[in-house]
Image (cartoon, rainbow, N blue to C red; front, side):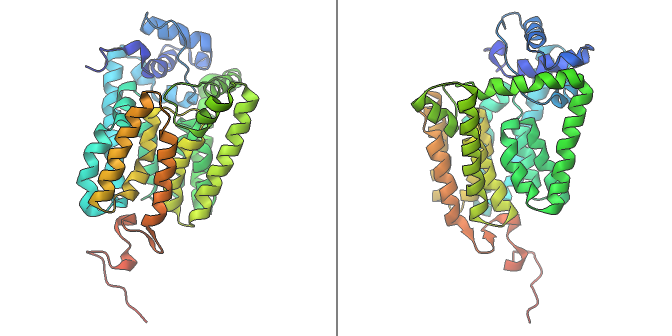
Length: 355
């Protein structure tokens, strides 16, 4: 039903075109803008303007089996996988919320505007959210490896990289994943293809769409300009502010990862409404009471709809929920982190012996 409305406008077309280039033996052309446009047009003749694909070429290799299918079947499978990833992420993030609020959050996680747009667009953000959510409950080495999967949404990678690199074992896992993504990308498109890849990245850094969520887009609307130098300067400043916000609040990995999820949206040069799913960890953290849950879920939906209407409220809402996180954090962590701390005597845990 979703596909029947405007398939040529969905981001999935770009991912499918890259995957089909791999599936048809033209993998080296995955980073060639002209080849991408030609394949997009071949898949959907009404697509006549390039829909950019800034993801690392490794994604095209992963999606190559879908590229061998007709585009409608490939979209259906990808949307189903995205829905499963979103549901799994919601389950994992439920541990951050008060136990009584989890079932109230589940419909929001699946049906909120960012979720529906991410699924309809066939975007990668549900999978990146799942990786971040899983990293909160994984051992340090695997936790870092999962954070490295943020490479499939490159503008989110810098802050998650800083969080992972702050601890040795997480750093090892993170470096292993990102190096693997880089090597697989190189093997897919070759050195010449990788030399073209930065051009695809700079294209998204200069885009300014009505639904942009980040602070960079907000500032550029005020001061104007789409020059790459200006965008690079804004990115450096905003990522630095984001890193400061993430690291000054707490030494706890969970706190830093959740804060990085919010600030990755705020600092990104390019973030649209589907990227709003990355704020779900912060919403789960804020769900301490029914009133707080209704407040943040209700205002989140309202802000998402207003943002799509062209009024840029989302950056202010993201900053507000990040600040709210300071109220829900306790000396031993959040109320719900890690399913309540065993040291705090969580139900079902062994009582701690005291000296």
